[in-house]
Every structure is written in structure tokens, then in C-alpha cells.
Length: 445
Ligand SMILES: Cc1cc2nc3c(=O)[nH]c(=O)nc-3n(C[C@H](O)[C@H](O)[C@H](O)COP(=O)(O)OP(=O)(O)OC[C@H]3O[C@@H](n4cnc5c(N)ncnc54)[C@H](O)[C@@H]3O)c2cc1C
Image: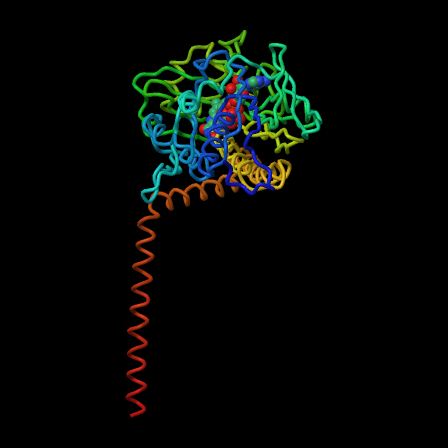
């Protein structure tokens, strides 16, 4: 039984195919099921096609889940936040520092809790993905299945999508949700003009096993701005960490990748020279970077060319979410968060009252394009600001960070101080007015 108006379009009875079982695809499926339950709508049939052969294939780095950009709220709405809070990475703060000649100066330190409210958390990508797919019925997922192409066909029952698979088979769907990442094959097939652009930054990154975790990483993640480049550090587990040395470049490196899977699979012929490059270019940074470098195996250094891409709108019954729709460099710490926000918002539109699927998808697109254009533009500004060495831009940047630091660390006290100052001011003004009133009324007598 559907609670929707019978004249409106409904997702009930439809077949939805999700290309890609990453963060976007899994959170979309959970969101849709959750909203169908809440709104008393019959759930559609959902099939998630995932290229990876087994769920256990590892992708090792950690992700910031943010309350300010909406990722944390989506996890709460789909009912997995409590579980993730239990297994979050060590260290709760975000430190922002400057480094010169091995000496680090802290500019700001941001707590994960403000005024009793959890602002965000850091989880390993593996844990997030495992938690999401374990919350779904395993029959919905088909592992080891690559979507190779998609075609829109017109039938007497309206537009349908034919999804072609690596097995030579094909599947027909009423809606195709494209969630196959930054190098989306479906986007390349249907919107070949929408190509990611190199955004002038390449990361040399590595996961390292390190036990015990250095002090700074036990406190939290760190973004450290050096004189030529910048460095990101974060814990993954209590015995492992990830770092990325961010280099400004005019062109991407040939041995780099912007696709998560090939990035994590990539091997470099000259691994030792890459490690040496990280050591040479990372001389600005003090502890714990030398310790992390000492624990790095040359073959673990990966080259990640950073790309971005403005949002792609839906075409017919094919709609894009997550990195397939829009791409931002990892430095934004927001790609996975926005993948989850897309997932929830799309599910919300598919379960809201609309005259047609087209109307539902356009409403989703309009919001997604506006939100992501803002975040992509902000990320470009952030990259510029965090790699600058010029005096005024640096001063502006550091002042902004210090103000943020004061508000988030002392905002509680500032609030009470202002309230007391306001009450004192009101009391004092009242006292003065009373005196004035009494003196003028005595004068009249
Ligand atoms: C080092 C690093 C650190 C990051 N840190 C953060 C952070 O702190 N916070 C944050 O919000 N974001 C962060 N990000 C970005 C974040 O990881 C991505 O934005 C997020 O993973 C996007 O999710 P997605 O599901 O859209 O794409 P993906 O995670 O790329 O998932 C796509 C899925 O589709 C599958 N697939 C691909 N092609 C096909 C196909 N043809 N057929 C079937 N399946 C296919 C893939 O195997 C994969 O499982 C980071 C990224 C990196 C690389």
C-alpha cells in the first residue's frame, strides 16, 4: 500500500539499479529503504552492482565524517552512526599547523564536540563501507560485476535503462543510480563531455603501520602548511596512519591516478626514488613525520593526482551521485560526506510526491548542483590558501583559523561572558533610568 497520491509518480514497484557499491551507492540504498519504511511506501527492487570481487577487498585510509556539511546527519538518519562512533579512529581533534625547518607551530585546534554536540568523527573507509553493506540485505549486492555501459531505451511503459555488464549479460531498470566513482564508466558513456580536470595538486601518500601511534596522531588529524607544500596526517587504527604530502604542480604526473581503485592498486617502478622525494620535499615537517617516513615501505607510496569536476545532471532515468556526479580532491575532506548527502537527498526526492520521475530527478539535480558548485569552488580557494607563502594571504588565512579556533574552543565561555555583560548592561541602564526618573519627578514636585 502506498501513502502517496495515486496520481503522483511512485518508486513502488519499480526496479532500481545502483552502479557501484561504494559509499554513495550503499548509503543511497539504505536511505531509500529507510524512507520507504518511514513514508509507508512499498520499497522498489534494488540491485547494487559492484566491480570488486569480494566485500573484504581493502581500501585503506580514513575519512572525516562531518557535521557541518551533512555526512554525519545522514549516517544518523540511516541508523549506523552509533555503531561508527564505537569504532571511530583514535584522536578526536583537527590540528592546523605551520611548519618551517622542522619546527611546527600550531595555529588552531578544532574539537570534535562543541557545546555538547558531536561535530564530526573520523572512521576508516573500510569500517564505513563494511558497516553500510552489512546493514543491507546481502541479496541486493552482486559483487564482481562491472557495469560496462548503459543505454536509455523508449518503451510503451516509458523510458528504461539497459545496463550492460562485464559478464556479457544486461539488466533492465526503471532508474539507474550511477555511483561508480570519479572515473565513472557510465558517465563517460552518457556524458562524455563531463571530464574531471586536474586541479594543480598531486599527493604523495602512504599508509603506514606504526606502533605506538605518535602523540600528535593520538590527539587527532593534522593539516600542516610548509614553505613549499603541505602535509596531511591522520590515524587509521591504533597502529596505523595515513599521510599525504601535497605538491603544487602545473600538470598531473604520468604515474598518478584519480581513481580510488587503481590508486590503491598502483605499483611504481621507482618506489625508492618516490620515497626519497617525499623525504626531500618534506624537510619542513617535524615530529611525527620523520617517524612516519622511517616506517614507510617504498612500495607503499602512491601518487594521487587531484582532479575536480563540476556536477553532472541526470539524463532521462539515469541519475548521478557521489564522485560519479562531482569530484573534489581528498584535501576537501568532503567527497564522502557529499556522496552521503546526495544519497539521502535523492532517496528523499524518489519518495516524495512528484508528478513524474523526471520532476523528482530535476529537483534532486537542482539542489545537488547548487550545493556542489559551492563546495568545489570553496575547495579550490582552500587549495590556493593552504599552499600560499605570500604574506597577506597567509595572514588572512591564519587569522581566520585563529578566530575559528577561539569560537570552537571558547565559544561556550564567550556566550556566557556576553550574556553576563548584556545582563549587567541592562541592569546598569535600568538603574540609571530609575535615578533619572526619580530626580526629574522630584524636580517637578
Ligand atoms: C586518500 C583519500 C582521503 C580522503 N579523505 C576524505 C575525507 O576525509 N572525507 C571525505 O568526505 N572524503 C574523503 N575522500 C573522498 C572520498 O573517499 C570519496 O569522495 C568517496 O569515496 C566517494 O564515494 P563514491 O561511492 O562516490 O565513490 P567510490 O568510493 O570511488 O566508490 C565507487 C564504487 O564503485 C565501484 N565501481 C567503479 N566502477 C564500477 C563499474 N563500472 N561497475 C560497478 N562498480 C564500479 C568501485 O569498485 C567502488 O566500490 C578521500 C579520498 C582519498 C583518496
